[in-house]
Image 1 (cartoon, rainbow, N blue to C red):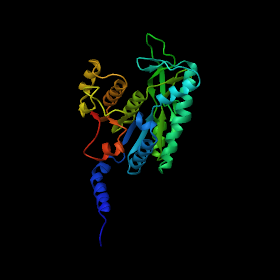
Image 2 (cartoon, rainbow, N blue to C red):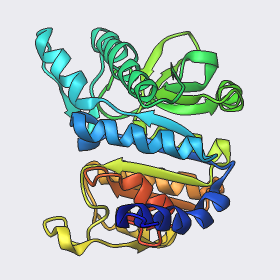
Image 3 (cartoon, rainbow, N blue to C red):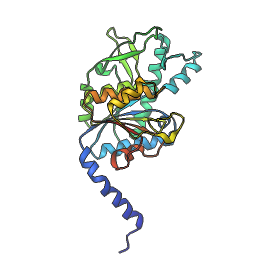
Length: 287
């Protein structure tokens, strides 16, 4: 009997992935989803497909998503001009309402629906649900309004969803002590959650190749960093913009006991599967 070559290749790929499936089965992975992978529809469907496959082979993914561009777009439609100070969105009471509307009412629901379309089961929630993320106001020279940082994490709701076979999809909104809402940085939330959950991996998906030694040269990718090297890069100002909170999230996760953290290029088709199930790996690993 003649076996088609593509069938042989598919079988070979599955066999090569077997050691990784055995290694990671039952492990929690926290995946921060953002950048180009979020806004480009074709890539978004592939990312959700990757996550559903990971879930089907026994990995327990927890998704944390951003939504900055969509928030800015909604603000402009409502006549408000987005303002940023040191990369943080100035968030007055009206802006906070827009942030909640976009992140929990639009972005979060869209991701949950996309997972269902791929045959998975997901539940969307924010940090306010089950008091998952207790936040406090960030103090700075300029009043940023309702911009917060995570003070406490109560992950019982996530454990309940994971045990029931669901993929949690978390919007980065925290609850204040007086019931107020706070706009949180999604990278920071992912780092804190991965540490609290005892995750095996934190994976930050973005729209750049990873950490670059020369920000203007995509070929200068640094494939691996130690925790100390990452800290020195931040202190020396060798990284800037959105890469700073990503490296800080990696450091938070590592300090909390997560053994491996990864910053990967979400523009690459099936980037998650390449990172998790092959020897190749992509982006920057911080260990």
